[in-house]
Length: 112
Image 1 (cartoon, rainbow, N blue to C red):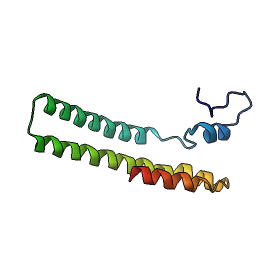
Image 2 (cartoon, one colour):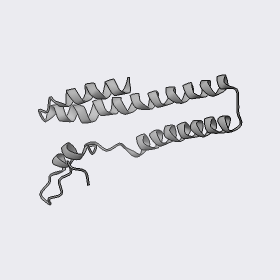
Image 3 (tube, rainbow, N blue to C red):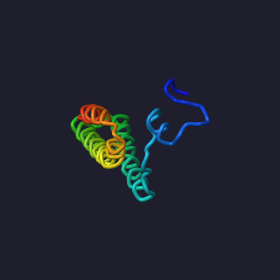
Image 4 (spheres, rainbow, N blue to C red):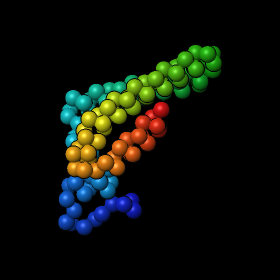
């Protein structure tokens, strides 16, 4: 287990979320399926790029596909960020945890 994970039996659900970053509001089955479908498409695109490289395809064609994967990942990131802002961040602010905003800003920076 990681250094920040508490293992005592008296840990409340809210404490677990705060220390190991589990999602307070679970995604519903439809959302999970949509995210999995997006990830599977991205994996397919990556496999396509691998095949293109294996086949020694034209560099420009490979770069176009790399750009498509980058765009797909960016889109997935924005979906996850929106969900995070609407659920996790809102819940933490309601609990009085204003420090969550610093984390949100850092996540936005990392997503670019």
